[in-house]
Image 1 (cartoon, rainbow, N blue to C red):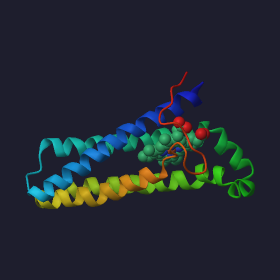
Image 2: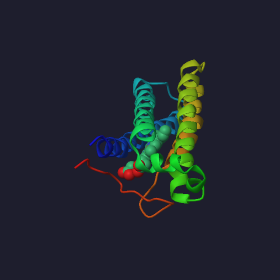
Image 3: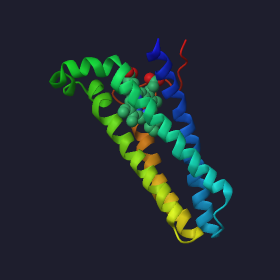
Image 4: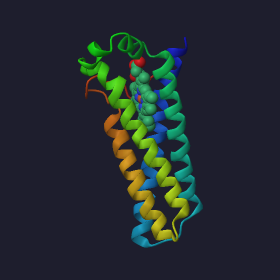
Length: 157
Ligand code: HEM
């Protein structure tokens, strides 16, 4: 079954996004306060965040367009779906917030690349990736919260 496979990949890749996000922000804060160079490790962190978010969005889109029974049911009764906070979360809120975060990660990566000096790179990383990570963290269906809580990780079997 493709649905459990992609759902668990999407569940687990979230941790790569969070680990790279926290790493990048911590490095940006340290880099700004000590006014240090932009190092290879800083760039590796940005690349890791960029790719993990892109992969996560592709997995999410595959779930959304092809696999999720929640979305398929919602589209057959759109008005009813919009009245159900659990369905609306998946149909609109989760997807929209994560795509805004994707935009911030793309703009942030470009700003970091183009910034004139190391301090400006650290600052761009902190602002853009900081806001992106915040949006991601509040749009994840954490256990015990929101309209449709989900586990911290999921295995496909
Ligand atoms: C950084 C971006 C994203 C993160 C961190 C993220 C995280 C998650 C998590 C943790 C789940 C719960 C998985 C589970 O039930 O175990 C989930 C489910 C889901 N996500 Fe995302 N997601 C992201 C982006 C997206 C995007 C862009 C879309 C749509 C275009 C999307 C569509 C979905 C769908 C359809 C589900 C499953 C609904 C169902 O249970 O059928 N996600 N996401």
